[in-house]
Length: 495
Image 1 (tube, rainbow, N blue to C red):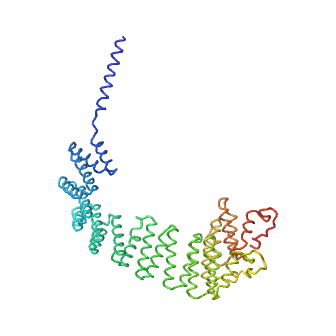
Image 2 (tube, rainbow, N blue to C red):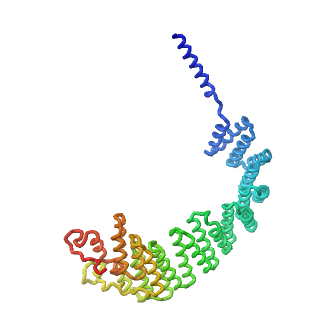
Image 3 (tube, rainbow, N blue to C red):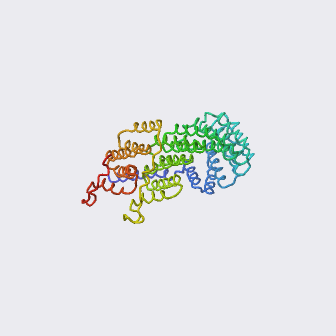
């Protein structure tokens, strides 16, 4: 019995050993060995990869194996800058695999690339054209070949007409290859813009990208092509056409990040055409359509001030500058707006007296820099209150009223209404709506709501930056203030 058990264990061990030995001695397959060579190639170990591939070539003779190995060998040679050897190998592959159309096209494209690298430009173009001719039934390869031919002709040989013809052929002959067709249009635009300086044709090509191929591009890229269209038209002194293009761009784009620059460009074009009333209307349209794009609105109002100045309408310049200051809610914007107001006082007065006093009052209040009343540096008056807002008209009033009516009674809606009232020149209504925004704000929104209520709403309402610290204290602690012993007057009385 014992001997039987021992025999069974011995037989089992022999069976296991017999099963394990072949696995241990198994030679790696072609796929495994080729993957090792491919890994070397990927790690840019080109000499090692070439040596490994040479070894594989002596072991594996199947047609698909030889083709794969030789293609990888040609890539190693190319990366090692052995261009002639690589070209010879590619020619041999085409001779050995005449029925493989993908290989024929692919190796010819690579041949064109190598010839371009060698600066054999005519031969490179010839290789690409052969692909386009012989493989017209493979539109992906043929279109790619024409694109590459166009690039060599334009960039390297400066034969722009031939290169542009190659690009045009892609769009006409291979329109179904939509991405390559669009790429041919983009390359055409670049050639016209940067090489031949034919800005009108460049603009037409960029415009074609936005009109014929808009779905191919992310919105920020599409916005760039719209801007290129306008820039080329401006360069060609076609300002009305550029304006039309920018209107189309603003209407076509969805995200305000990309819409608003197109709107701002329209203002610049009106200004460039010296059509200042139209520029002002455009500025206020921007404000009414994008009231919560704060920097955009400040830029628009700044342009509006400049439009009045260019017309030498200095009282209106000052009134518009006051609106700019009213609406400024960040330190940067307040400083910039204060400078614009000071400039406007200078334009009205012809001297810097009120301009300097305005700046002093806004910073230090009536007691001046020393903070003590009845001293030499006292500021007599807040001159900002004398700056009357520019006159309105029924069309302007309707535009602002409609924009306000379109806003919801929510935190963001009240904010938008507040800014719209500021730009309309109605500071009391602006302060009322910023206060409503503060009341409607969530806990997370309270700091921003308080900031805008004080630095925009109450600054506009009181015509002064000075004294706003007490408004902040009232909002934060109530009438008794931070110490609990004060008696702060309600700054919102009358609102």
